[in-house]
Image (cartoon, rainbow, N blue to C red; front, side, top):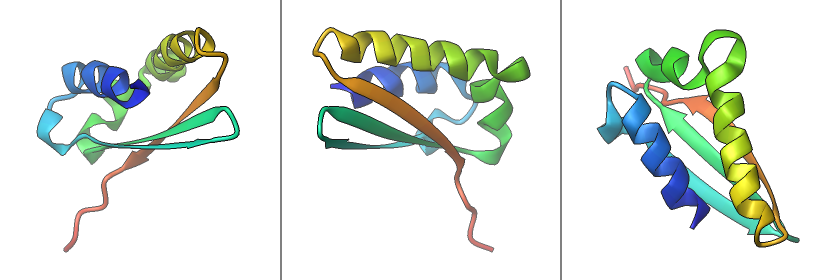
Length: 82
């Protein structure tokens, strides 16, 4: 549920939407989403001074609060195998 919303937002922000990976872990009323994007897209997702990721987190948190849950998002760079 939260994964789908984050996926929609992330894929519309990045230059390489096919590389977006999201995992969702839910425990004790808390949802943790792990967002992985290509190295080139990290700046697009984080934004200047973290404004974009902060806005994404606010959207996901508001969406989770209607179900009385807490949500957090971790952003990681996809490691390319050499």
